[in-house]
Image: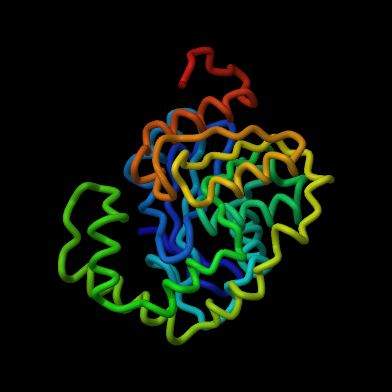
Length: 264
């Protein structure tokens, strides 16, 4: 498992099709890891692009840290990773909180982002994610894994469950994650999207509680399009093939030899 050093931090990454003309960096959400892309979405994107995935700090196999979960820090981590990997300009795709990281990075360094894909980015004012932190228990994790995180359709073993439980306990009890998320409550309402001229695809579940945020972003980002996918907030798990095909179709316009088939 490749572990690289970025700003004195150990970061777990995975890359596919490194020789491709263009790169796509995939950002997972809070309380997840890069596996949400690895088994289904990333291989489809890798038929056309250099795909880069990484575990956010204290997630997956990346090093644990007690602070730095605000969007400014997370965006800085991403830009530093791109620098280490010598990625001059990339497509960014982020899911859930990763979508907010992608938006923050595009606003912060627009010259480094070719196209943007925002998947189910929530309104940070929504209390639901912070309630998860308050209500967390091992039983909650077992229920969550059984219902929402089965990306491989393989039952999670006891050892992996214990490992994930320790990670969640660390995140929720030892870090500044909740305080940092609260500090970002007004990120969307305070961001200036009028100057963001990056082609943006907004992917949201048709039945998702985050759908109004996607519809609002469509009114704020000039060069954006909104596509609704059957499902709720967990659409990358529910419809990974549809998500991958839609992203490929959107990004293909930037390739030297654009795809001609309809990916629906």
